[in-house]
Length: 397
Image (tube, rainbow, N blue to C red; front, side, top):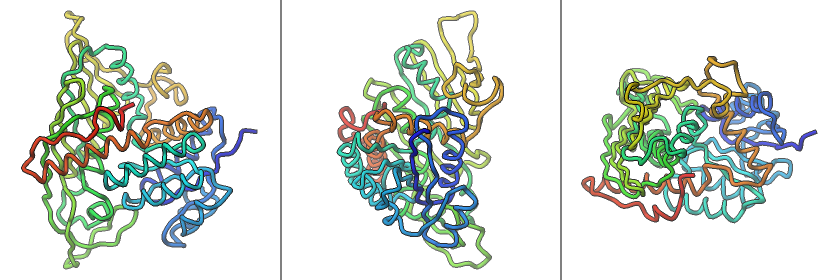
């Protein structure tokens, strides 16, 4: 019998459903050193939490996360709540000796992220903490990182990132907590721009040292509808309206420690782009390009083959590719949900070996510092804004 890993998940909406699927699936496809048990799910409303437990596969439900953190029969706290609650839950869990998986971005401020990172350092290795930048677990991006580490691209010169969604393009789409700065911290910047920052720093192994940015809100107020799962049903005509207090779009240029330059865009107003999380990296010897809307493909170009100019498409379903051997025969692609399964697998293996799982809270703190600098730059005429401690803290590993 494998030792159990008894998990409590706080929050059961969009991310909670994705995390639940991962906890259910991981032990059936991967030979894990610990046996994850879906012990309890926590929600604010008793009936909704009970319904979520039955639907998502949790043994029980409660409404008080503090009660769960204090329980001796819980080993890990999985935080799937809005950003304004991350700090309190994570600090309490680490103080109680629990392992922590926390959704991104780590917090709503640098100060909160610093306190969380410090607590994680103090708790390790008895308890480990990881931030859920799930796109790292795409086989294509994990393979791209291997290519870059092998020097196949040469000296990195350009990093070009876009994260394009369109779910807020309709001005009558109702308010959700994601449009409330007090809960979300920021809008497109923190929600999807944070993924771009983490992916870029992790892929090339270098931190961003400074940014110049623009933030913009296209729709300053929206109807108030009934919220469920971070999204809202369409409000009836004449519904009361409320203010949007976050950005709808974020654009910024950046410089990396090694001298590469970057340009990034995150928006939830790009009509027709459902979840286009894209990154292209150009080096002195080659380039690679990735788009999550075609997540099982990686485009790769090497300049030392003059008779074979142009990008070639690599189908990321071979057993030699990261994670792929545990799933289907070659040519049978993976989906969004598999990223979270891979995340669970990597976390469980780190817990079993008392290794620091990545991205660590320190890695996530590095992203938080970039987010903060972007906001400060945008508020001050897009002035060039250095990242505090970029070369020594919050690494990209």
